[in-house]
Amino acid sequence: MPAAPPPEILAAFEAAKGFMPADEGLALYAAAVTAGRLGLPLLEVGTYCGRSTLLLADAARRAGVTAVTVDHHRGSEEQQPGWEYHDPETVDPELGVMDTLPAFRRTLYRAGLEEHVLALVGRSPRAAALWQAPVGLVFVDGGHTDEHANADYEGWAPRVAEGGLLVIHDVFPDPVDEFTGQAPYRIYLRALASGAFTEVSATGSLRVLRRTGTGI
Ligand SMILES: C[S@@+](CC[C@H](N)C(=O)[O-])C[C@H]1O[C@@H](n2cnc3c(N)ncnc32)[C@H](O)[C@@H]1O
Image (cartoon, rainbow, N blue to C red; front, side):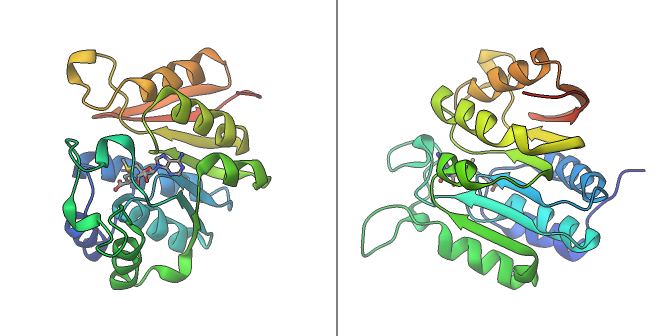
């Protein structure tokens, strides 16, 4: 039976701002608990307000490792004012631009998980260029342009340790289903075509792959 989050963490996940449905959250959590057994950090690209980070943080707490989450906190293209996924509450009233960092910090604090998380604030490729350590899991949930998705794949997938997991969100094989572009689907195909990753599970738009070969 896959590992499930404790009720208070599931409640915090459901209360947090974000877009991930519960079934995908449960699949992400189970993957994070499995990957945590490698004793390596669990890394997320795309923090937003911390909805999915909570799950990685609790899995990291269970495993005695650290969850790392990367975001510039200025929102993706589809989250900007006037776009479908915009939430006016995420706009800094003084600057008039999105800032999801305060909401993220409140989410983590309320769940009592702050000490298990290292938050990197900035652009994903800049963080990836400096990050050399192997990780047990990479969860890609950042920008949805091909430029961003490919940069996330090329920057972080090389860090997935042997037996570790690469989890990709918003994989929509059918263009009818997608609202935010098919770039995540294309990096999912790229990972499979590389021969370095093998699919473990599919839940909604969440795909879990395991590193079974070298490279990307
Ligand atoms: C779909 S949201 C993440 C949702 C979050 N994982 C959750 O479940 O609630 C995508 C996030 O990626 C961030 N993002 C997009 N492109 C980025 C980049 N190049 N570097 C860092 N963060 C980026 C945005 O600021 C946004 O917060």
